[in-house]
Length: 263
Image 1 (tube, rainbow, N blue to C red):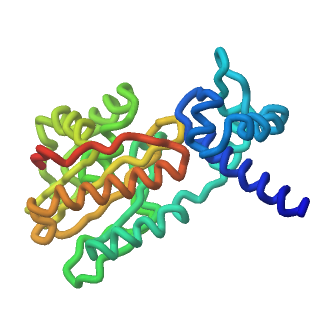
Image 2 (tube, rainbow, N blue to C red; image 1 turned 135 degrees about the vertical axis):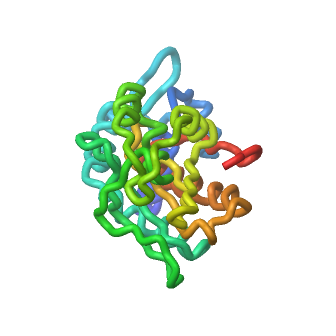
């Protein structure tokens, strides 16, 4: 009987820790009790050992917040996370839905480029190939631009100064690049299309827990298959996939609506 009570108490404590982790700021005992569907007295009792161990701490007034020890443990775990492994099932679902190449890129600050760390190629014989571990420009293509748009201002300005001709098309950079970047920030995704090389893509940013840009996740295909009428629907799934991966890394963000998208 005692073993059953201890197990139930342990499960409730674990559930409580999950709720604490999901809170975006300080919370009151009543708010936590409401989310946990438990009496405030029970939540107060369960919180006490967590407070003693530094997993939860008192905030202003009568509120609580995640404790420094909780944050320390979380940062240690995140530091050793294999982002590619986390992304594989997410990319697999995108690939199964669209049957187009689905990829994850990570940002390299030292070179201001994106490196492909995971990719699943389309099964179609006509394809736009993205090789694993290849480096991509931030100025050309949806995967790079969705990173560029969410860099800190100084880094974004520096990256924009490096714009050269298209690596495959040889075309000069677009004159309205700053407008393109602003549109990506507004919509929450990047759409790229170049019919001269029959390439198109849709990508969204992936964020770390602290809100800084980690990389991008997206779908690429020949332009003839990724037609304009498919962009909005693909963008919704790509943004949801990027948000899911960001959330797994500890970040929570709002997903923009697809209404009114033009590219």
